[in-house]
Amino acid sequence: MLDMNKAILVGVCLRPSEYDKKITSLDELERLADTAGVEVVGKFIQKRQKPDKAYYAGKGFLAEAIIETEEENPGLIIFDNELSPSQGRNTEKEFEIDTIDRTEVILNIFHDHARTRESKLQVKLAELQYQLPRLKRLWGHLDREKGQAAGSGGASRGMGEKQIEIDKRLIRREIAKVKAELQKVFLHKETQSKQRKNVKKVCLVGYTNAGKSTLFNRLTDAEVLVEDKLFATLSTTSRKLSLSKGRNMILSDTVGFISNLPHHLVASFRATLKDVIDADLLLHVIDSADDLFPNYIDEVQKVLVQIKAEYIPQMMILNKSDKADRIKIKFYLKAHEDSISISAKKGENIKELLKKVDDQLHSANKCILLIPHTEQKVVNLLHKLGQVELTEYLEEGVKITAIINQEDMHEFERFLQK
Image (cartoon, rainbow, N blue to C red; front, side):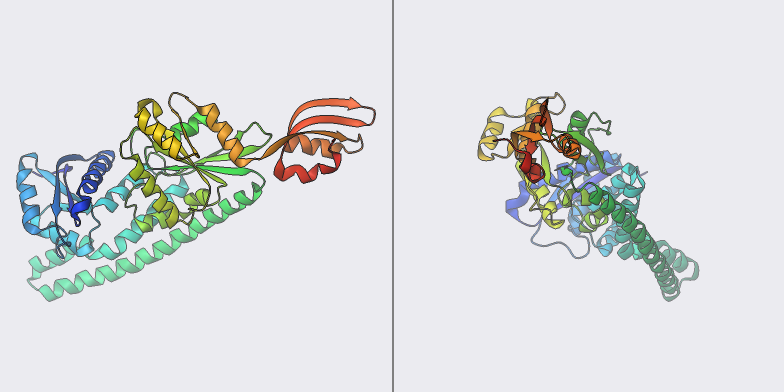
């Protein structure tokens, strides 16, 4: 009996120079399968010049993979490449084994990990958009059952097509409904963003499982879920964080990126990714203990381009430095002045990170001001915008030594002491 919790992974390499990259991608797919609760019993890569129209991989190649793992009784084939609806349908029909692709695995993980109303709506939208062109495959049983009962291929197709058209209308209606709900979420976020326009916004981005949530918890004393699994975080969590130069910032932890992230999934998460687009600074968290981290940096940059966030200033955070190759880290830090190595788990270099963020966000100067006693509103504003170090009450007014951000200096220029 086939075991639906066991799977064969199949990848197709179309360029010989990318074979090693395909091995890495299949290893990542294995981690995705593990996160989805599926045990991988075999991994197979076929070199081809172009995908097979009917099965994506070759029919004989798939047959050999199934024979090689038959003792494990796998009930699932997972393709690393995205399948067309007909390729998935043909493979299931030919080999009598359930067939899905990388996108469907990611959608299943997102479905299981969605906790907030926002993330549930976004996942639902992505699922509906994925299902729409695949309805023929989902309703194939109607054709088979009708054909067996009546022996008429024409009658069975008519019934199947009728059901598909009904379902297409229902799904399109549901997509419109979910989009309307998400638009409300998006507008609410825009309102929140306008209310925080005077506060600097910093967002953690990075490849999934790079340690963003661990760093977020370290910086804010929050209790965001941390798991050694892909996509543990799906919704954005934001906290106010005080910096040393008299200004707060809003720090946000958001969903992790991954290679070959489906375009429609990125589009569905527009509300969550708005925090990235609106940020003044992106902290790009990198798992520096992973030898392939330069590849993951490239994948994150691709997603940032996709959401039009590539021009936002970035700081590279080489996390997990306690487990990384010190020589490799030293080389990277030297080549990238906007980078810093830390260990979020152990708390190493966190103060240095905050200072670097502070310096990036604010240009500030220490100033001495003499504010008349009649200008109490200015004193209150100074306490709000600046960092007051010393206050002296004189006959002619209040003498204050404070650190003031360059962008706020226009509020206090007339009170400056030479």
